[in-house]
Image (spheres, rainbow, N blue to C red):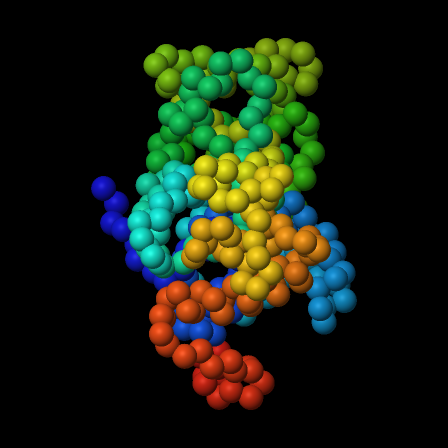
Length: 342
């Protein structure tokens, strides 16, 4: 049984609104843990359009999704948030006033006083490749994310895909794997040039294989994969020995387990008030694209506003009876000390 992590607030979602919520809560001395199904912070900004310009962030005429994530992380850094990536919250239970218990699919357990859902349009779920019988190997030999690199040590690993995730994990896991093969349908990649160059160097030095084609079948027994049948770009067939396969075919958005938590939903969005951005369950808030209310605009700047008001009410739950004095960062030496700029 894993140890239970106790904190003030659990934020579900590490996109821009979740990252700014860390800052707003931190100004009020509220400690946060952040859980995200992705393997890095930034949410949609980092995963779907890291290099795409964003033009409507106040005071930043142009900023990319990746750069915005970097700036938000730097802003939240003084408050030392703790991140848990490659984790999806599978259950949320309210045990009493200001007492929530959460568990993740990776076995993590949390107790907290407030929950903030900042999950964008929902959870990013992996797109599964159309390979017959793949479900027989899921969770034992086929994995759509890497939760623990050590679990793949000395494995014969087959990675499928041509984007950043596929190339990053190819380069990171190659030193651990007994053998590494990267398979893509063509000899062109959508990943960062540096990652592609590192992969090609590994191929050139005989440390891994690169194959062009598509998996059309799997072989194995008892949920343990032994080989994948590959149809090459030239129409020929071959087998790649593997006992671990990582398909990276992109992500899709689904509401996921949030739908089962007893929250008031309107068209798969969490209905909140406009005073605190709180759901129908006291102590559970929703900010950003996951929420809905009259006049809602799905803009990052709207989510920032929502996070600021959420933090004020979260303070009252976490510190019942304590007076909350509103302060400005421009004039409060107390806040400036917390930010390390005093």
